[in-house]
Image (cartoon, rainbow, N blue to C red; front, side, top):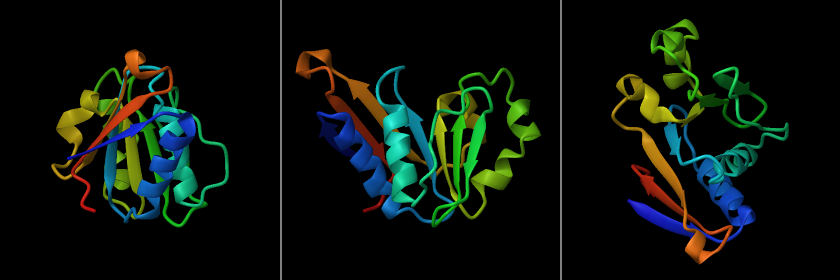
Length: 144
C-alpha cells in the first residue's frame, strides 16, 4: 500500500497521468472517494497518461465511457446509479474487464462481487484541516 498527499488539483492530475503511463492491458482500477474529492481530475490525468486528448468527464448517466484514441483503450465506469448488478451484465462488462485496455471504476464497491481479486484500489480523501485542495490518495495492489 502506498499513500500520496497532493495539495493542488494539478498534483492529483499528475498522479493519475503517472500511473497511466505505466498501465498495462487488463488492469482494473477502482476509484473511491466522496463527491468532490477529485475523482474526475484524477481520471482526466489517467486519460492524459494514456495519450487521450479528447475531453473526459464522469459517465454518470451512461455507466461506461469508452476512449480508444490512446496507447491502450480506456474504459471509464461510473456505477453509482447501478440499480441491479444485471445492468453490468447487459452492457457486457466482462468484455471490458478482461479486454485489451484498462478499466477505471468509480463507486466500485457497488459491484464488488463482479471484480476480480487483483484490482488496484485507489481511494481519495479530503482533510479540510490541511487545506481546501489537500488530498490523501491511497493506492493498494499496484506493483511499482
